[in-house]
Length: 70
Image 1 (cartoon, rainbow, N blue to C red):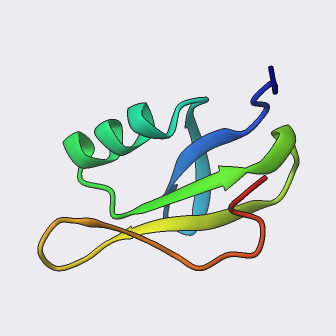
Image 2: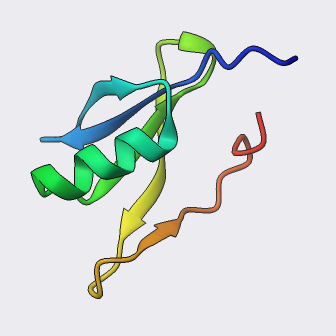
């Protein structure tokens, strides 16, 4: 079984804030707290990338990113 070392978070004032190891939990948190961008730190690294944004209808839209499958 592949171990998931990714950390998901939200973008607040252009800063990644860690939320959860689960994308589902991070989406829920972001929706409840009014955030519109979800970020990820691959393998607990130092660099965060944006992976989801909310559209004007409130749906999460995946951002094309070369590392999404890692």
